[in-house]
Image 1 (cartoon, rainbow, N blue to C red):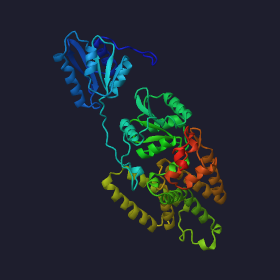
Image 2 (image 1 turned 30 degrees about the vertical axis):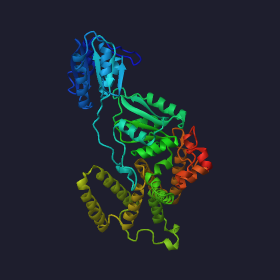
Image 3 (image 1 turned 180 degrees about the horizontal axis):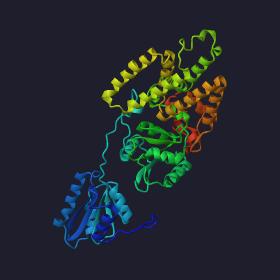
Image 4 (image 1 turned 30 degrees about the horizontal axis):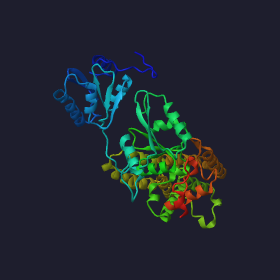
Length: 496
């Protein structure tokens, strides 16, 4: 039976028709995790549908006790529908009249109660999704700060954000994405602050997603939203920290929360959003500024250090006399550019191996890589020591980049610059860096200039990027998000 999205199929009044529908369409009796509990209450049949593993069994048992006790306390002439409605001891009970909604509620982890002779069912939220408790994310650790990171449960994630923003204008707008998966996706924003045009664009794009499912959660959502193609630079920012997500909501950003994902998407974002870290805001403004500058230096090092060093190796005349020591002191049969690529990809191999290696073995793997492979490779003449040094420093610069996606994009840009320098020397370096800069400047993420506030230049925004200002001095929200309310602090408080 082919069904249209626009057509509403009412719930039959016969519980037997509902049961047949569940058997034919949903697999009741075939799928072991899909269950039904049949009760006789006041001589009428009442069925309860549920999915094992997604429901809290203790709640279901308590509800069944309440329903069974109706036989002992009510007369046969009693209106069963009203009695059951009053006996459902749960804070979240919804009436549904559509078969599609009935199936969706059951498969989402709710239990549905249907009664013979009634065309309305009750959906009770007793979900208990399997998952872990909030803990500090590995990719965004801080020395001082909260340790309750986001998890794979969208309900917990919204609660962690709501705990930090107890404002009546905070909205969590729920959508369903995926023809088969029907994954919960939520837009989180401040109604009186966020740009309504951005909210409408995101809502429209999410509703327009036509795919069978999004098992890769937020990454799939990102690819539908920004249509990145083969552009390596990230156009949205991810975070697994609830405090970072709440901070961006207060600034006027719109957050996309996807069920089954421990990270949320921050929109809109620029290049400089990807190099910010929560640690900067957990320290004093001076220390935060120092950490920020150090991070900027690390990002520049990860992109430009190796191409510059290779350029000086190929053209020593560019070096002043005091820096003439830069460059390999030994001659090898392997060209320097090949050594750089081998060492750079070797570090990438180690990074991937560290991800896939069990934790008890990771230390041993590091010793093998550092002591045996590195030292022996130098001893046999495969690498000169300077190559290992500069590749290692460049790799450390990549690790200082808070955004994992940006660090990989910077590495790809570095490899491209290395090839241009090896082929064309100085013109290759100049042309390569210029093209890279133009490429980044011309990028737009959700109609937002990627290199703001540097280009287009905005003095106040640029100063906030260069210096970590104290919170009392951060009066205005970033103009890049087009906030409806520009002031983060009441004007009267600002005048004082």
